[in-house]
Length: 350
Image (cartoon, rainbow, N blue to C red):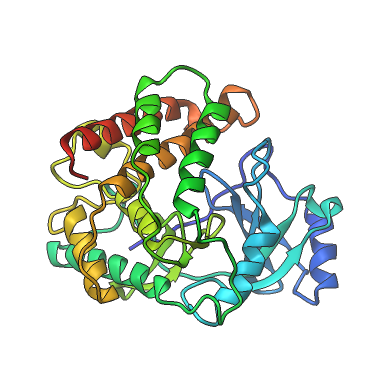
């Protein structure tokens, strides 16, 4: 069994350990024998394992070269986690936030490390799930999302603007697509028009994760069907819970999907025994105590949004703002996701 293991820091993304040690000391955190490693799989914010004085902490900072003004707000993410963790214990516990750019050149925060198993990619190496385990992981996935949406966000002091949320999301991500384009992708233009013509009213208000997928869950090494943590809250807010469920479905590839979509899967959601997207919705609805909702619009929007996120990362690579060669093929991923949304809209089934 393996967990998401840190590795040597990528060239050009190293932390200034002298300045970081001084900051840790100012926060009365361990700072002696400071070392750094990097969690290599994320595509957005950079995540490091910092060891000092026998303690392990996880540090998150924005990517180098990002020009997306509204993304990568470390202060916002840390403040959200500070309010959320007491009412949703699966969220990480933050131990320090730094807004002083003189320390590492960008805001960052530190949180406690959570040891566990993370399922990444279509076939995670070193992890074997039986069909029954695959089914139960899917059930836990759906129930965890429903539990998050049941949080009393107002009592926790979590804020947002749920009114008009769907329209803002469609219009906002369409603009982000236009800003991030590096070449014409007709499928993305088609989906953007389809979404603009079919926006539903809000289904309600809840605190939502906005990037809920297998590789943002931490599973118990002793019981892979039990979720012990949820990571990557940078896009979380108060909004429409069905938009959040739609995002989960956008990432959920099932056995009958085309091979190109399987190839870009973020998690092993189509192993034998895995739930279908329809079954994920049924399990979510059962846990939430409601009837299964219609999800075509929400899942098509999710595919569009994920494609835009991938394109934003790809643009950084095209412009030479990152040298990470993992990003070289992301342009193909944008087309695959856009085509999946067009096909789903055409057949009227997510």
